[in-house]
Length: 216
Image (cartoon, rainbow, N blue to C red):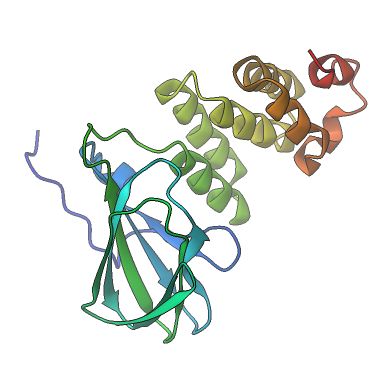
């Protein structure tokens, strides 16, 4: 078995993310377990290369602009970042985001906790799955969420997003099984989300629906 792994960014698949975001999974393809690492790219100026967010997980984050130029907005303050710029955010509650200023902008993001071992974020599975769905590869998306369920069986959000994709794939039994799992793990929050979820449109005529979403 090889004692090293190689991935060139030109060979890595970029997947659609929320809004105009395009992200390149790195941690999962390489099997990295010590820290989080992924990349974000933009074909056009004005597209997001970091979605607006705070690090609710508590991660410290480092961003490295590999190509192009981006404008980061950090709690309302703008930072111009040309290729080669390293931006470190030790405070997890800083609201952050970045927009490409040039086509071909590429940003590498690395994150982890300063005081405890790394654990992969659950969002990686559904980001990847919904990206594949957007490309018309629903079966692959469902397989990714099945993998997520195996890796994180106690995660309500994994179960919820898997239920969404199972419903879109036409497997009502599996969709209800995953939705019930999500509700069992996440309670009323999952019920509230399910009631307004468009992906569950095909489930609402099923007699199981009112039972699953009824308040506990």
